[in-house]
Length: 485
Ligand code: FAD
Ligand code: MLT
Ligand code: ZN
Image (cartoon, rainbow, N blue to C red):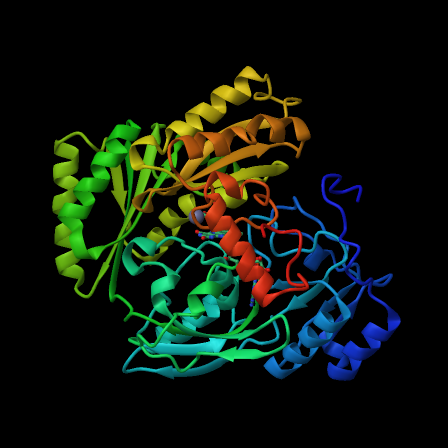
């Protein structure tokens, strides 16, 4: 391909033929099949959120039932037609779009709540339900989805499960490996695997659903999710703090855990460079501070009693100021201010690519080493003469993320994607992370972006076992080919 000169289309896959389209149309109604034509270019489905990866699929299938998905997958397996499962297409590693001409199988028409038990808090829903819709539904019943992220308006419940996304409240609610109770999955041979009735406690053999959580569409299509949801906190507080060093960020974190204890629900950090990009992108929003500081921390508390939480937060902030860990700070006084403060964190992804594109590295590192990667990346890019005003390709390498979970987002904001920048960063970033015994993917997955780099975070035996599992479930390799496995 001209787009990806380093990968070749697997010739064992059949090219889509008229008879295949005829079969799809015999199973699906007109509105469930989208074909490329003069008026329909399918770019929305072929291109990823970062506008970095672009496939060339000529067909998107959007079945409205699990049975239809099963029939289609079975047929594709028999015919050796490759498929890409797609959710809300907000994934950040190029995993949700085709590499060549793979058929796009979107679960977006499978988007209903199946049931909710207001006593246990167990929600059962279709995989294509948009995360925000799931959370709004739960809010009506006094519950909350145990995961929140900036893409909530577009990403699917099934998509976040397939990715094992982490998000902004993992610190409080833990990972989906803990909260997902059961799944309904269409396997590559068309069989439907169902554990939707699973209970909170069930030690009867292997916990099979875990394999599909974070499998990124490589061994099955998730069609249903059963998930344990916590009660919705009645009171939320958000404070946005300025801090003068990364050392102090860590100290504020330790103090927040101690002083805020069970009401701490998010601890996010941002460097000044990420904020500079965000201010530029949101020129009409007033920034909480007049001065610039090296680092910022966003702390969210949530609990059942507003007065109790306010008092705890106030005393935490007072003593953090006294100890000079925090140099300036604001606390949201109402819902609008709370949303405004969150936007300086949640809008970083959009702001970092606003001027052309972004190279994203989502890594886990020991907390003490977390920010040193951003510094090292900037040094590396400067040495290569790639950073500065236009026409230099790189604007800046910025750092932010879920510091409470040891998860850094290194974003290299660029004016355009270029091989030169990519070469300066890869495998440099992966080598750096591996040397500190970190993970090259904390929460976004491997997808297409990191397909050649899995060895930096997994050993030979682990990779072999993964390949064995892939071979077992998908011997013809039709599901999400060319990606990490
Ligand atoms: P897609 O992007 O469509 O797909 C993602 C992967 O899962 C692909 O490999 C795809 O093949 C597979 N897949 C999708 N649906 C299914 C299915 N039903 N069955 C099998 N495989 C499937 N991630 C975080 O972890 N934390 C964050 O804080 C965070 N914030 C974000 C903020 C923004 C603005 C954006 C754009 C993304 C963010 N993400 C974050 C990335 C995150 O990975 C995605 O938002 C989400 O997990 C993907 O959901 P989706 O439905 O869009 O899936
Ligand atoms: C985030 O935490 O904002 C997300 O993981 C998205 C990103 O890093 O771009
Ligand atoms: Zn994140």
